[in-house]
Length: 164
Ligand SMILES: [Zn+2]
Image 1 (spheres, protein in one colour):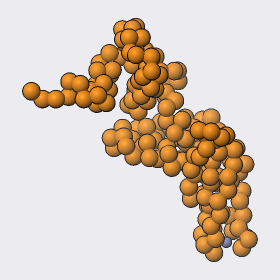
Image 2 (tube, helix red, strand yellow; image 1 turned 120 degrees about the vertical axis):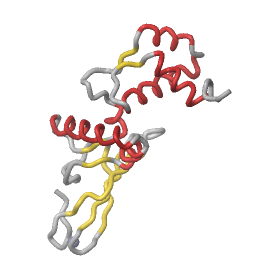
Image 3 (cartoon, helix red, strand yellow; image 1 turned 180 degrees about the vertical axis):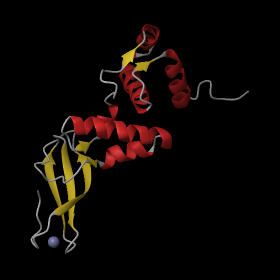
Image 4 (cartoon, protein in one colour; image 1 turned 90 degrees about the vertical axis):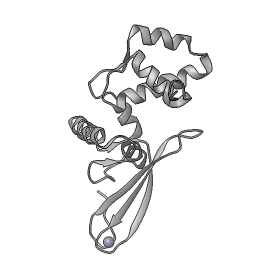
């Protein structure tokens, strides 16, 4: 536990996920002493909080993602994710945690959706796969279907979204 010079415990105020593109990912953990107001920030390698996080905490990136979900979905996701994390003895909810399907397994693709994905041009296929799996995960779904593909396609490329 991080302790302030005044003798009180420091409280976790925020966690930012940084690095990753060209360097090793790390977390910037912000803490504050509620007694004297001292603030400190510490970099740690991703996932290695070493007792610096005092309670279950969401990274800024995870919170941002949660904020973009419809409120009723966000509420369910928050409960599920926190329960899941506690059961695994973890403390920090990351952007990545939110992509983990909470039904236990990986996100599956039904065979027709898989066939359609194969027809997507290679340069955008990987992105399409990630976006679809994220959308499914956001909704608590464990399966990508053709219907979901159509919906995401309409959203990102405007196809089928225009009213005639
Ligand atoms: Zn203090």
